[in-house]
Amino acid sequence: MKKLVLTMLFGLIALAGYSQARWDVQLGMNFSNMTKLDESKALPGFKLGLGMDYAFTDVWSLKSGLMFESKGFKMKEGDYKETIRPIYMQIPVMAAWKATITDGVKFVANVGPYFAVGLGGKDKLDWDGEKDDAKIFDSDGLDWKRFDLGIQWGFGVELAERYIINFTGENGFINPADAIDENDNIVSPKNMTFTIGVGYIF
Image (cartoon, rainbow, N blue to C red; front, side, top):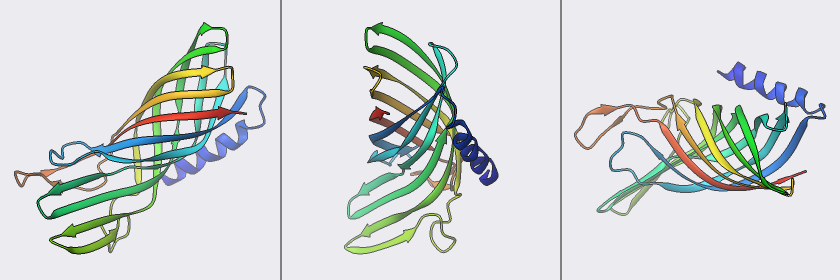
């Protein structure tokens, strides 16, 4: 997986020299959680990075980029509070379809896989006034798997060929670590994130 992410990163750099490639900066607010954890709550976070749009035709293009994104979840019950917030470097590879709504306004829908590497993050625990924290991906912490793979989909609009407004959803395929649910059963949760973002095309 690490070699795959690096190969894709070098591929993005190689595409930068082609005239069909268009670049943008993106910033968004996300809400993340994990599947199969009934007591977990959505955790607000961020997503930012550099996007790329490689046009094949006026209608179809390849969307990718290099993003930095927080994920995770929070739990609260009585005097028990826990917040798990991993930070990932992520590369999406999506097919995009565009339709002109009116002059200067295009509707965009896209879908495809994403590949991610965990960079860091902390598990913050507060139990009856006693506080503790642990690093998420370290072996002496939560020891989560660093690599994630999933599907990303979204839709939005491009305005005046300069501005982007979009909504994006992500569903992970890889279980970063087993957990125990409220019935003491071992479950395999996966990342799940929704983002509202804006971007500027240059």
